Length: 489
Image (cartoon, one colour):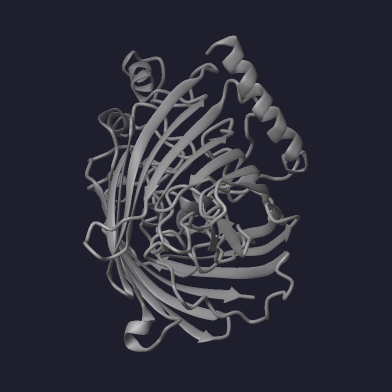
């Protein structure tokens, strides 16, 4: 990197630090999370919102926004809303030839998680807005969230020792630069309060947010409040995006939107250690870049669809699986330890493809493929080096229940050979590790039905079947029934 490039990067990050200084002392949020999908907002780190123009809506856009208990503010300069998401999950006993410290418990378990979010915002003028979200996440996870790369509950906090006090989820300054006089209608949500936007525009965001608020979105597979709850169905499992334990980072994004396509870039801080709550505030050393191209065009003639292509690079204090195994083979350690190395900066990179396709007005198919280099330590999201997911999302209008929805999806996850050898020799990651490994792909099927009970009250039974949890043929399969209660106000 030249001196000029280093100075430019440092200047950009200094602006971020100033604009988000109030967030720095805040307890950082964890991964799960949820999003503001085109219709609603979600829980800790996963807020789903589409960057597509409303004149060319993404296939999941509904004419019917979700019902809420309380009326919204009439003044469109402001935003005030909230949600509560409770997920109960259990699993019966299952076969396990052996277990390690990061294994899913083979005995009967049950756990209930909660995520409560207050969304606020103010539009300062016709091109600038300030968004602030306060969250509280708690409850419990099956086996403390360990034992499965495709964990069954995206809302869980992976570190049970974190404070249960409310924390700053998002603090974003959002600026829109008009590049055309033509306007398009915008569906207001907690991440964009504008009623209309320029057809061609550049959107800049600074502050604290989740990368998956704006990258790798999918209208039927990104929202744990109304849709699927598995980590690798609601997100690309191989996308090790910059995040602290609760799924948030500090940085900026730049998003260019045109008639039927968009191009976005995001820069974010990385954590000090894998799954860590503290970020490294030295962006000239530790940083992450994210790139995404979105084409709003279906693969089936005359039916809407979206194609998104993603790439990312991470620079952080990450270990190398092959080096950890070499230490073990030389007898230097009793078991390989990916964290047993001096401070050094290594690179992790990967890419993904994200597809949505309308099959009928209220029936959408989706698919994701993801890959990362797999030699470098899984660090921020989950322990997946290759993934393929696909499924269907249906709106209840088909059966005359317009606020209901249902879905069916499957995902198959894999890890690199170096990662396999590390686990087979008794190594542990931040999520998985049984003390040994009889490797097999981790295959998961999930289905759910979300029913609207009354204004803003939704209930959703669901079921997952997990084959080879933690990539181990010696354990499972596991059935995980669930029940979700979601409140919008």
